[in-house]
Length: 423
Image (cartoon, rainbow, N blue to C red; front, top):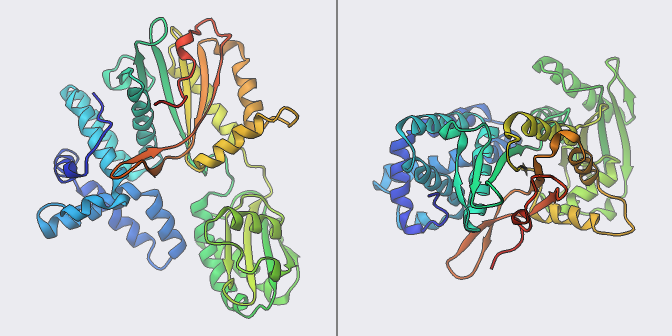
């Protein structure tokens, strides 16, 4: 049975067993490699720490254990460790009910996940979805571990003969021409060229670099592009380059954006989009603590294809991973979407006089296909966030936007309300 409740008093024991089972060198080596790679690059360092949060949390546990022989009691109350302990506890509970071969395969999967954040997110997504259904009283099995199917989870005791569940994790980079990591590395180069000018500004200046497709892969080419951006700002005019890139400069009233919003706030995102005339691009703000601010954004001339990537993935799961012999659902974890943002999307679709969102249009098109009769629903899940649920009780929660397909010949009333609130 998958463990869904964890008590802080059990943290030291759980960590010790997980370290023995998985081997701490797999997370300590990862942390050392990241610290070395990101040295001197604060933007990249923060991003990589966030992407590898599980490895860094376990590394802190290893350090505390080496000093105190075990995690001290106060360490168990560090909430930044909770996702790692959840992963460890649920891994151990899954392995406890597995054969030797199954245990070895899953441990190897954990090893690989420390090297690849996308794989770690996929494991966390599976555990999160399994936790949701266990809390609703369903018995869960893991077909891929048992080598009885190609889908992730099997729900028993629902519908006529159970429900197949395939989980797909979609990071913020999927379908993007400019990946976040590349943008952050490039921003570090641009910062070296623009920081001095930004601190001398007495007004607002938006600098938008548009490239034909993707950022150059060679460091020398990226450095040259950063130098061209710096030169355009120095001479104070927009310019087009021979490779098809161009830099657009525009001033804005700094008094309307005195601080450009708190860091990482929705207001900051809105302000950046407004002053640059772009939408949801990776951005850098320099000099905003003074009288002036420089906002730099890089964008591709090619269209991002996030939804296309998502539904290609959903379609492949329906064709190749669900068996089509019984009812199945595909659930997509949206790593870059908060619970509130997903709720806002769903609410927009509920407005009778409003246009449907691009997500709803894409889902409707997919579910209307003749090859998806066995798919009784597609759902989209936000990233999980820790929520205080009374004294001494913390829950990991998110939101779901679920689209049932009631006209499927596999449909059963049991499939209604699977993501509704429970008491």
